[in-house]
Length: 530
Image 1 (tube, rainbow, N blue to C red):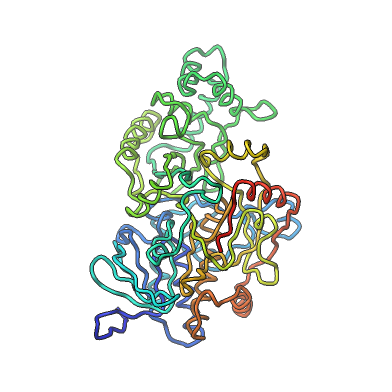
Image 2: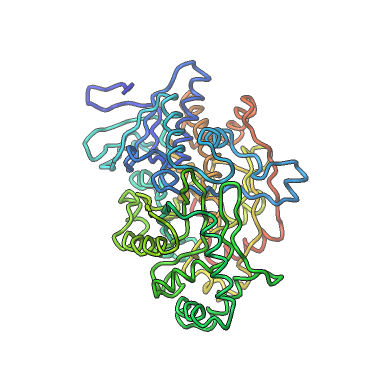
């Protein structure tokens, strides 16, 4: 390790990253490159991770095998008017990563992603350590000084970046975190988690044909056997039967068969879900059954592999925190479900089913006390102004599996419209900066989001732009003897501009929609704990 050791045995770094989620890796890589650009030397940077980095670097995209990437969503009319690509104009480091990992559109082969990230870390001379737990942190005033890990080693740094889904380093540094969706007064409600899996042997043609037969049978009232399956999957609930059947045809009455893209499969109907829930004799209900086989996001990988993001498990906020602290390891009940899935998939043509070694944890609360909290209404107003923006991103407020109690609370407060337009908003990083621990930032779904914002702000592509900005901000702070919380969006923007890395800026204010969401967020107790 290229570190300086003090007589006390403390290893000294310039920057420490905690958590190897992709945005965290990008932040330390960008920091190393920026330091070298300015000084012609590499800084001393350490990446600490709770995960087993021998199994891959890159958190839930790599060890969690989330191969189907959530890409920026921009309305076609906007793309056409601005002559933008399908996914807009992603952050420079994210584009580089996709190119290195050979991603055509949305499918990331975890092995290639791991190789790309390892190469980026090696080229930047960044040290990293696996299987780390925090024993203690040392603070002086409003700054974090060092981290002592369970093995007894202590590492100090000038700036710290926490990229964990539960802001574990920030919590250790006594940063307050709101559990679950406490900003809506729902502290125990949390987004479902997913155990992604890969299948081998099941061809796209086999899958397409199987699903089409299911659709024909489920929509044929005279197919008695198929109707029994449908009723079983619906838990004999007539309303759910009608809902599932209705979702199998489009507005023109055509069957909603799956679509095959360049490297992905879009499942548009619940036919596969109904077949699996019937096989399991479990109602198609996340909370009643403790599991949901949702409409699948399927990534097409090399060697006949298909990656499935579809199985949801409900968790409380406390359970999400425990899972995150336990290196996102799946529970025995989740692994048991994989055995049922393997049996079912083999019955339709698969030869093997391989679950990921870690869970995809979508959200685990949000830190408070940030420089500028970010809520959903602000996103719908395009977030940061164009003259300080570091990029632009679009994604729906995606709360897959739902927020337990949210709809009921909204209806009780007189809100019946709970679906909001797509926010297309500019990227900044002030929502990651901790006011009372001024040399610490949190870049993850646990950043300073309030209200609906984390539904969109939790996405990796967005946080990649934020992570890139934080890397530049950390070096700017380091070289000017300041803290991360002192660095502005404008300072980072100037560097992106000077180095020709500033993407197109096109955030779209949706004033009426923002006002509607602002009313909902404030009514349900959206709080800016500043």
